[in-house]
Image 1 (cartoon, helix red, strand yellow):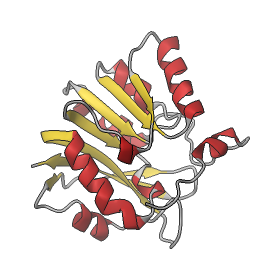
Image 2 (cartoon, one colour):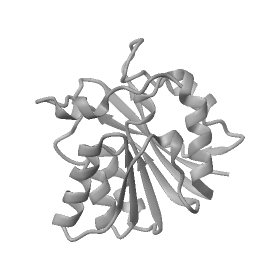
Image 3 (cartoon, helix red, strand yellow):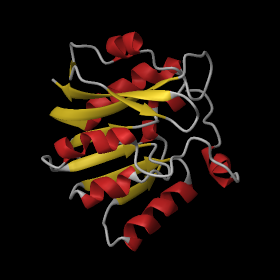
Image 4 (cartoon, helix red, strand yellow):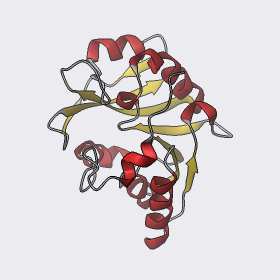
Length: 192
């Protein structure tokens, strides 16, 4: 495993360019589907994203996992300020797993932050976290460039990574413009 970027130092910078000022447009697009679901949702690399609170407001049991202690504290404070409950864990994702398989993983910007040589291990990790029939809400970053983070998540490569042997892809995608001047394509995948 390559050395981990110092995400804590990045969160201490005056400007954090990957953060949005509100919910990801894909979250809003998926909200009617989400409102019909229940159970536990994990957000890997949750950072300070408002989706953790948004999912808790929909009644989910939420778990956020992030390397940054200050991002985790931000999430705990934000949940508490809204009277919401959730678990926020400071950990390397490859060193953590839920006690029992979860219903949904909300993959927003974690995959694109990992070097592509670790994507296969990450896909296996998510497969282990989800229950059979569980859902991966995945936002695949489209930068059109080499290098990163964020790394370009070409859809053809994602279809190989999240292969139909293990995953059922919803054919509908959601395009979500990103503050970095790029965009994400969101898909709902179901674990076989």
